[in-house]
Length: 287
Image (cartoon, rainbow, N blue to C red; front, side, top):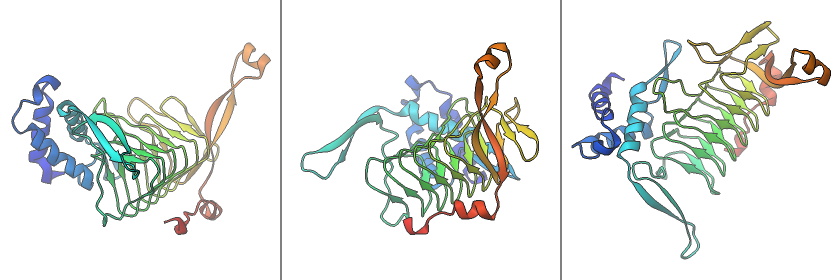
């Protein structure tokens, strides 16, 4: 990130101003637009892995929030193809819809999908309709965002990840030091899953249909007889190659016993093997 130290200092300086004042500061909007281009190109990220450890780039989040302060509400319009017909929306003028060049290598299938400016989709990413990618998100090469999926603000998605239909990847802008959701390379996330509150999903993991991962739900590892959970110092981390399914565990107490009550919990039932690889292979024909 050393190449952008000067811009970083500018962003942090402008971020100190209140929303009502920063728009009057000379150079603030120009600095933000330069910063946003770096987001769009993937040269700066809200979080990145350094020496094997994920670290938050707080100044990048500050830059995204600066855009919110600088922005003015403005109507946008997308022509639908039918004469006189268009889809309209209202958002901050600093965050219009992302525009892609014909040769960018990204495939966005028509049908209601949106990518907000200030996010990065690498060449060979496929996005099925309708889906949404929010500001600050980073989606690496070969990944697929399936129908009704959300990639939230600042979420980091690795290479060759499959986000199946209706997957919700949570976003976070504040506090600026909070870890965004991170899904590492080669992960398969099944339909109707939710991954929230800075959870890190390790490489080549498989998250089964309907699994919810967040900061308050422990994950029981049946293979290693251990429990994975968020602590004050670290987010919930799903180990590399884990296969996680939705399960339940019984509740204690007389009332729970009488009524046979249990509570949802994710369970690691195995670690990835050749059989898992075959079952979760990405269909190249779809690309």
